[in-house]
Length: 451
Image 1 (cartoon, rainbow, N blue to C red):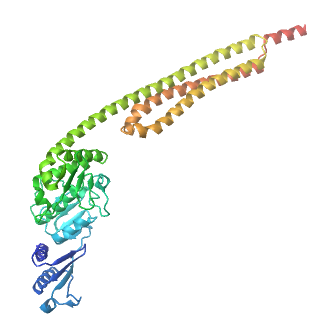
Image 2 (image 1 turned 60 degrees about the vertical axis):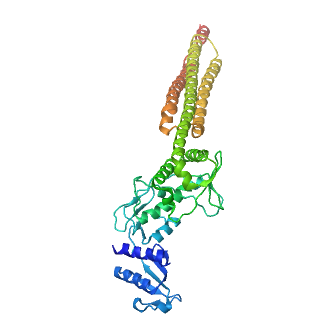
Image 3 (image 1 turned 90 degrees about the vertical axis):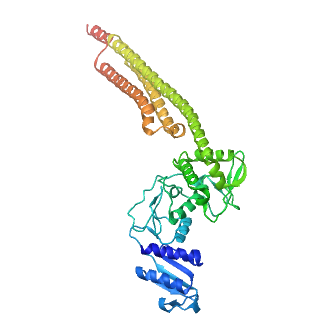
């Protein structure tokens, strides 16, 4: 295609003729061009119908047919077409490498010279005419939260998702995909150590023993240095570390410790990873499974303590219910006895009423004590759930704690309501008897006076 031929031409001029390429999201600028190179670029752009211009070193505009060798070198600028879907349009591999370092926020990157679409967990790289779309994975822990750096310019990637390939069998057969792979190797390497040294950029692992790995530049690039097999293994490591946001810190520590344990001192990062990455990864996974086992024991102990606590709480509520039943039964017995005494004898109504008030207050105190205990337990459950039982979902906590407690509380509340209602009815009955029924002693005295 025409854009691919133009991209190959511009990248070739950069590689062989010393041209300088500056590519932004909207425009490409190619400088330090000879007359022939400038004319070739301008004619390619003209054939594609893109806005273009040529300037000499003084900034004077020139027409493509009037370029003079006496005023060389020339600078050519032209605008790229834009897409309505917000995709980032990239013409050259040089510009692609620059964008990878700057981390443009677009999710869909359309690269002219890429062959097969490259899907990652946070970004998709495709040709200009491809119809693929990006599927962004779940948010993960940022490597910058786990890798310590003291330099102002951070080396660890802010988001690891654009640097994890979805298809592990991707072959990286073209120059554009290998450009991405070079940047990906550096991003992955900077996401696994405990610290990145500010002066040298060495990757430091705490160990023991302490390990410092240097990332020496090579002419053939980081991807070629590492190799496809080791690159895929590194991808598996990074994916494993950051696939779960809550567990990323533990997995990061385990892998960095395993890499350091493979040998201390100073070494080349690419050599060490090719040799030890697989074994360190296996060791980290085994250590992680052991840590999960330990966590399981702690979880079982916490669940056992929770079961014991719920059992004790429901038992105390049941005791409060029994005390309420006993108090109500005693109050009813005393109340009926007082009613009988009031009807059958000349007992003072105020004395009987005072005894009834004391009995009612006793029942109220028992009910209030149980109610206060229930409110206290509810508050404690709300306060301690996020601190001690965060591993339980709301549904599990409701089923295991709140529902049994609520059942016991319901029995208490119904018992208390019925008991209080019975005491109130007894007080009303006593009032009616005191007001409308005369005692036998009063009747006898009245009959004697009449005779």
